[in-house]
Amino acid sequence: MSDPSRPHQETKASPEPAGEAFSPRADLSAVPAPAPRRGRRERRHTAPSRAGRNLPAAIGVAVVLIGTLLLGLFAQPVVLALLAGAAAGIGVWEVGRSLRFRDIAIPRVPAVTAGVLMPLAAFYGEGEALMIAVVVGLTLVIVWRALGRRDGMILSIMGSVFALLWVGFLLSIALLLYHTDAGPLKVLTVILLAVGSDTCGYAVGVIWGRHPMAPRISPKKSWEGFAGSLGGSVVIGVLCAVLLLDHAWWEGALLAVVLVLAATLGDFAESMVKRELGIKDMGTLLPGHGGVMDRIDSILFAVPAGYLLFELFAARA
Image (cartoon, rainbow, N blue to C red):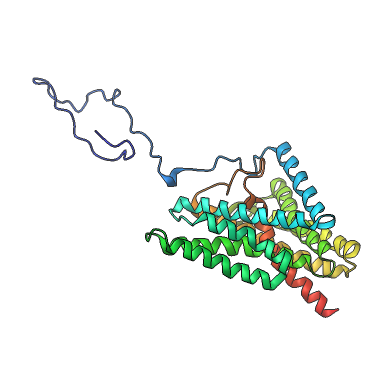
């Protein structure tokens, strides 16, 4: 009996009845077609792409997320810590699931646990606690994996380090920024600029986009959309600097330009990972948006850039 999971495997023909000659012109329409392969690499996420997303669902999810963020920033700080921890944990889980399309199986229990703990450590203990959480988390992953199967161990550990530093560590910097002077307003400004960059770039790119920035990485990203990101974010940055932060207008403009570059790099980074893995979205948790990583990819790179610039502004003052 042939193995249906291996459609290209040659099978022996059944013996022909006596007296019947084989004809190469025989009717082969009755021969069943081989079943398609259903290997691990053939699977795909089925969430709709950004261009074809469910707009009402996307708006509803965005309203809930923005409301929760504002509650955490200005009323109940513990909500902010829990929101960041949940986003980091889910993000690490999504990255771990996606890496399985390349047969890289990270130990998701310790990795997700470490991802959740990093933002919480940054919120309650700031920089020193964050570094301890990073070391403890990576050690936990390495020990957990070392006690498991030997095959694929190196790739598993490296995939875990990649996921934790990309998601858990970078997102935790937002909690460090929160504890600086006017921290809630600074975090809000960074997120507004990252989201504004994505939104303005998307709108302008859909209408006027003609020249791709990096067609091999993200074919839908155009130079016209990038110009829209810059223009819209500069307006947002100047308004936030003058009205929220009491900074000079040029600081808001500079912050916007740097964060647009960082957010675009963050978007490209996730696009490269998805293209390498052969998937459309990292997950399907957020209706109309895809996965958590599909929403925070630009924020992850914008947060450390914003933190650095705000520290430079403070040192200059």
